[in-house]
Image (cartoon, rainbow, N blue to C red):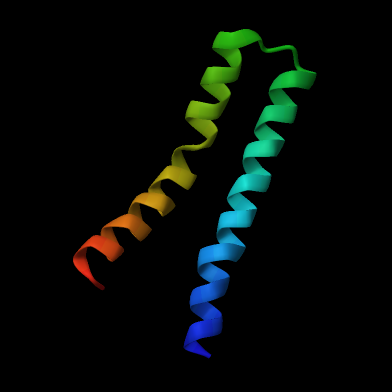
Length: 64
C-alpha cells in the first residue's frame, strides 16, 4: 500500500501538475495575454505547484 501511495503521489500529482500547466497555457492563449501576461499567469498560478515540488526535493535531500 505504501508503494502504491508513493507512486500516486509522485506520478499522479506530477501528471496533474502538467495538466494544470497546460490549462494555464490555454488560458493565456485564449485570453491573448501577451508575453508579460503569460509570464504573470505562469508565475502566480504555479506558485503552489512550486511549493509541492520543493517539498518533494527537500524530502529527497534530507532522506525523509
